[in-house]
Image (cartoon, rainbow, N blue to C red; front, side, top):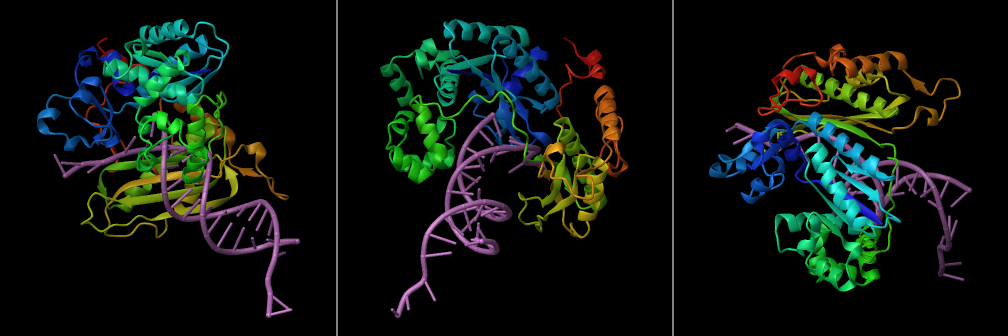
Length: 428
DNA sequence: TCTGGGGTCCTAGGACCC
DNA sequence: TCTGGGGTCCTAGGACCC
C-alpha cells in the first residue's frame, strides 16, 4: 500500500511562504533566464498561463496581472528537505521521488485516512507548503489518487468531494473506483505521455478505466513492457517497488542557456569550466568518479534565420577521477576546434558519464585505477559549503562577477533559508 | 527583446563472438 | 542441391518523468 504526497504548485508555494504579499495573487515562477513558466499558482492557472509557456507569449493584459519570480532553486531545495524531514519522522519507509513528491509505504497501517489527513495538515502547518495525498495499492494508483485529491480541490465536482485533499483509492468500492477511472483521461496517468496518449485514443482507449480493461497482449505488443506495467498497476497488481535507497547516478549534466547570444570563444570556454566545476562538485557529493566527459554547444534554435551550429564531443578519460583539475585539463583539450567563428551560441553544457564508485573501478594492472587529489578537493568543497559556493575555485572559470554568458534573473527572491547575507533584507 | 534543466528506461539493429 | 543457431555488447532514438 502506497501513499504519494506532493506540494501544490511547489515553487510558487515556496515563494509565498516568505512573501505573504504573493498569497492570493496570480503568481508565476520562471525558468532560468526568466524564459518560461515552470510553476503557477492556482490564480495564474485560472488566467490561462500554461506550464512551460514562454512568458513573452502571455497576452499583455494577463501579463500585467501576474506577479513573477525568477527560479530560486536554493530556496526550493531547502523547503523540500524540510518537508522530507517531516515525512521521514512520520513514516518508516519513504522514497523521495522528486523535489516536491515522495512515496510512503503504508503497508499494514490500520487507519490510513486519519494518518494521511494528519500528515497533510502537519506538512502545511510546519512548512507552509499546501499539499495533497493520494493512496493506492500500487504506486500508479497512489499517483492517481494524488491527482484526484488535487483536482477535486481545484475543480470541485470533477471527482467526489470526499476525495478532496486526501484520496484513498484503496478504500473505494470497485464501483466507485471504476467511476474515478472513467473520469480520468488516460493521458493524466503516471507513465502515459502525450505520444502514447494519442496512440491509445486512436485505439479507442481514452480513459484510465479503458486502459485498465484493455487486452493485455495488445498493450504489451503495441507499447512494450513499460505501459504494460502501468496497466497492471492500474488493476492493483504492484510492479514497482518503493525505492528507499537512491541508485547511483549514471550521468551528471550541467547546462545553461546564456542570458544573451555569445560569439566570444573565451567567454564560452569560461562557461564550460564553470559547468565542469559544478558537475564535479555534484559528482563528489555523491561519492562518485567519472570515466568520460561530454560537451555540447548550441546556437539559438529559435532564430533559424541565424547560422546554426550544434557541436558535440565526448572523450574517455584514461583513468576515472573526481578531481576538477583533471576534468578541466581534458576539457581544455576537447575544446580545440570545437566552436566556429561567426556563430552566436546560446546554450552550452558539460556532462559526466561512465560514473562509478572508486572502489568498483576495474583496476589497471600497472597503475592506480583513479587519479586526482581527493584531500584537496574535499578541502575546497568544505570551504565552499561553509562560506558559500564560489568562495574558492579555479581560474579557468574566469572568476567574473557578471559573465557575458550569465543568466537573466530579474525577479529573484531572497535566499530566505540558506543565506545569512540575505536575512537582514527579509521582512518576515 | 524574449523560449529551462535536469534525469531514466526500453527497443531495435548492427557488430561481433563461438 | 544444400549455407546454423545461438549469444553479448554497443549505440541511437524514442518514450517517459519532474
